[in-house]
Length: 400
Image 1: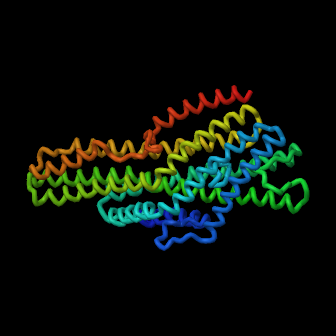
Image 2: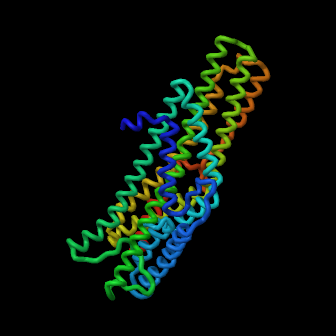
Image 3: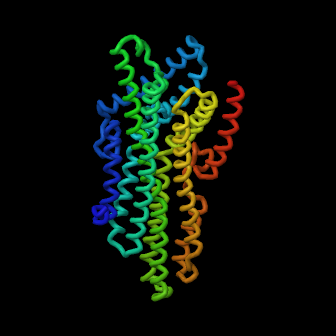
């Protein structure tokens, strides 16, 4: 704790980035490095993800065509959405995040470099600026710890439930419902070891990749409120100057130009977030809906013991994503209010025109969206929850 107090805001932010780089590097997608190249680790993860997809279809085929067990379809669909992160999460979700980290690395690097520069500049200014940086870092820490906790709970459940069934109920169940072509764990020890080792690899790569990707987005997007607060503090500084130097263009224009440039930087950073996370958000929200729907039906059918924990995880991730989108929406609305509330009428005509330009641009601010169809917000999350419940009930009736 004492170590954290001694660190400057920029140093604490650098520590968060270091953690992300560690997890991303484990999956071969440390695209925050300027000299990043695809390595053998990246190809290994891609191979694991692709094999996961193949094994999922094989599992569905065996379950439905040979075993006549249609519930395996629901269990497999629960894990096919994130499967590219390779846990009980789903294929499309993980693959999207993996490819996004590789091909959209320049957007991520730009955002992190801008945020680092902001920390280094404003930690040297007056107390209000430093407090703003510290408050934002505390929020980042809480979100990351919360995300780490929910990932840990899911992983613990994925391993603990099969162990419980094996030692207490004398039943063998898989860590994740996934069969491997040509491998039958009941044949001999070697095939059983291969089977279990593959499942463990899927879970481990999924944990690191999932956590790194989600933390990537959280660490960038939750800085929008901080940027908005700096915008407000800059206006406060200008208001204080205007009290001492009313309609003194030489004193106020440099401050207003700085505010104008900051407003442009804010727009640019949010637009970069849009580009960098467009497909990640769309696939994450869509597959999270599918996860929740199929997991609810699995719970009703009683066919997947880990389903309740996975349902909790899917809901938490859905609301975290919608929540950080809501932060951006609220912040852009606040920026508009800050401009409206400023004493612009005490400025010169040329300065009022600059205020007018900012006000005009703030009328249609960039926001986070789900595939460009609907805003990423808590209101959208509630609408999706209602739709999930309706579809899950209909699907459950159909299955029964």
